[in-house]
Length: 216
Ligand SMILES: Cc1ncc(COP(=O)(O)OP(=O)(O)O)c(N)n1
Ligand SMILES: Cc1nc(C(=O)O)sc1CCOP(=O)(O)O
Ligand SMILES: [Mg+2]
Image (cartoon, rainbow, N blue to C red):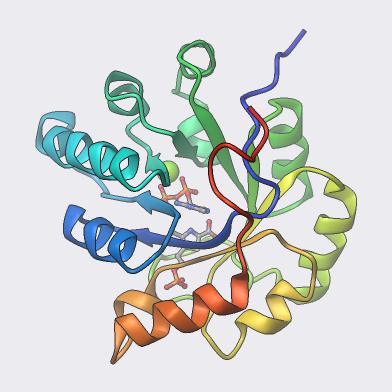
């Protein structure tokens, strides 16, 4: 029997994905309460301090801080959660993450990946990439809104996150598909005015109330 990962809010709201502790600090201060530290292709030694600081900030702001990829360090510093992609799944120790009580978010890009993710009973499922993105080279085509809606319908009560090419202009149509969260990189980090962009996206995404009111 596969035991589920701890639940998170069904609607995680605005979910910025950023590559530094500086971004984590400024976005938590701006009111963001779901966020991911995504540092790519470094040694564990090189990212350890950043992960420790990000987790401490997440706790100080009572935010949902997910660590991308570096699941061992996420366990070591007791992060709120870990985000893993399909390739990460081939090497990560999911039992260790589950036993440590961390939430797990999983990337998916098509029905086969969705089947695999569902079987693992994660805390949320990310659906990407919805639109073309300049932030990451993607091996697949964008899924678009019709596929997003189909996946959301299939996923029912599971917490869902849409990612990939989501701008302020496109956020309303993505949210209208019923997804619980919009994950964004460039819409905030490349914005002419990141504070204004963050406030606009926070208002659009309307997250649920914070800790204490969500499922254990
Ligand atoms: C919320 C969210 N969704 C998808 C991803 C992508 O994760 P992954 O497929 O593991 O790719 P990398 O981010 O590791 O390049 C994500 N990070 N966050
Ligand atoms: C990190 C990442 N993962 C994706 C996926 O589809 O799995 S798309 C993506 C990049 C998203 O950046 P932006 O908001 O700038 O398009
Ligand atoms: Mg990954």
